[in-house]
Length: 227
Ligand SMILES: Nc1ncnc2c1ncn2[C@@H]1O[C@H](COP(=O)(O)OP(=O)(O)O)[C@@H](O)[C@H]1O
Ligand SMILES: [Mg+2]
Image (tube, rainbow, N blue to C red; front, side, top):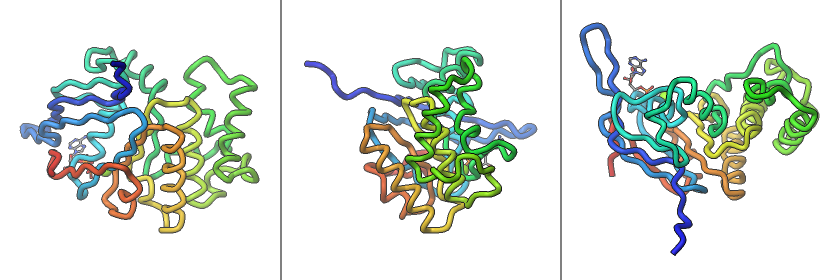
């Protein structure tokens, strides 16, 4: 039988220890997680639970202290920093609470940013960026700078930027945390739509309304998943 359930994320006993002077703090205490291609999951938990730490490891922005992590079939724990950043750039689309847009760049330029680290920008890339922004309701804002846009609009630019590389995985860390409830719902509806098209999405949140959009919810407390 053909295995149609492809795992994008496979984590086994992931631990993260921060050293603060002489003291060691274990922030992740043995995370086991499997996410299948096409899933939409929410990781919920109070502030300080370790959600961002876990997501940074998922997105190859950081490494675990120990444990096994396979991203889209690749054992990333064995990669060099250079290989890790290549994989991150190719496979991951990030959306952050505070948008992380470049203030002096236009909406289109911000969306193109992940491609600058690749082979340079083609005409087709620009067309794709414009198309993504149009799709996300920013047709009339293509050349606006972030400061000229609302929080919801800025987050939609960030989502377009995440999509420009056709990532295997979209990671969103408290994506509605800086938005009013209407803009927050709009952002979550965009994620829902992207998921229906087959995109794999992991969202961190402490907001039950946000997690209600996901197909599956994992609760993180004090560095470990609880039932
Ligand atoms: N770079 C770091 N050095 C030391 N401690 C950290 C670092 N990053 C996070 N922590 C600690 O790890 C814990 C979990 O943080 P975080 O992953 O940001 O939680 P959450 O996103 O769920 O609020 C917190 O106690 C935080 O202070
Ligand atoms: Mg956090």
